[in-house]
Length: 537
Image (cartoon, rainbow, N blue to C red; front, top):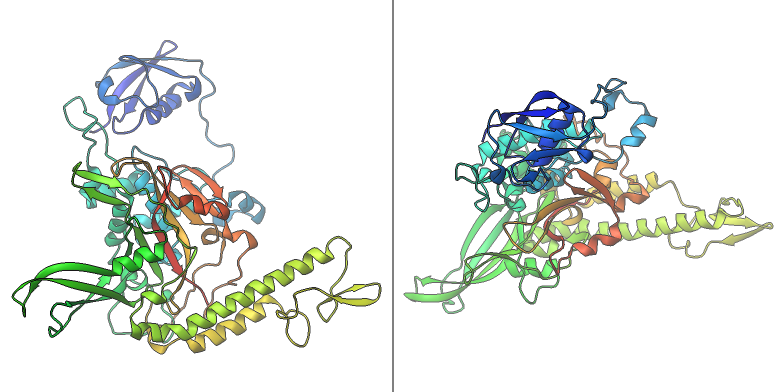
């Protein structure tokens, strides 16, 4: 329904204000504040049935064009233009940028948390923002240029035009003309998939293509290369051993984690989804037979989407119901077990060595931390052999022997990283190195989560959780033709294991220790969509 013009009467003056019944009353109150100067927290808008509340239903109030509403409250100072002109991030000094470290949220425009959580989760893919065109690119640009919550109305309108399902009305709230009063809640996983589908024609820019990658003469699509894997499915029947198996290949945007009464871990749910039993007519037996379908991944993308299948159709009540079961998910995931034998053989050399290197990195961090703690109280200094000088004696720091070079103290971390990267690149299979946007190790780290809170599939609340390192870590690796990698250091800050929680316009820090509270097990927030990123070398 299009906005209508109503009159607001306050302190003997009348003001014309636009009222959109598709938006919550809080939006209208903000417009009243802009017209009258009465702060929202001490404003009373008199409507049919009493005072307008934030949860009032416009369908019951039935406002009409030209209607006059009385506003009670003492006016404060009207909003003024900022004393200082707006300064964009690229023009700010370092000290000014320090106060804008925390990313901003998105306003809820009435049951749009599903879209807000999708947009925030996709920010964990910096390469996507490099490749994007309008309108999603414009929305991300706005999010990065302000310290206030952003209104996503333009993007929402385009989303509903391209995907009419997201313009569905809430049938439980009737408007004045008998149609749905407001927009219905939608499924965040469906929105996530539809947004990615809508940008499937976006091409991979040249700056993201590593030297030596295969050039078939055709422009590569970003979503297909970076976010889609390939699955091989083999269908065979133990009842007909002489019948040759049916093999099919398909591209996939996500892998599913089936949840049943025995599912406790994400990996077991995924493995369960890769093996299924179906009934179909056997051409050799001439009757119905049981077939087993075994699926394995033949290509792993840089970004792996995992869908926790938490909503299932219940025939007895004729509606979708939420599966509350607690299912633990890992922050690092080894997807090599999901791979076909051929792909597994290509992944294993680099995968195994990267796991060993990560253990060595963890040990070096412990050594540096212990050294720092040991020296801090007394202002001691490290000797040239990685020991502390106390009263003229060399006292080695416990546990440093295995992490330091045989010849002495730890080298600069950048030296280790450069050496490790060179070694790992030599272990990557040529086929994987030439495949733009593929995972070269099969090892992933969790970077974003979309959660659902509530008991019903068609209601509740969606939120996004994104790892802090996504916003404060190094940018994506960029290439210019055959130029060398110009990315910055891959050494992340110590606090990068914490997360940001995006609850519409409210953004807060979410400690890594609390991630286990998103495993599910009740009506509180449960992980629904998980985004994993292939680990950097």
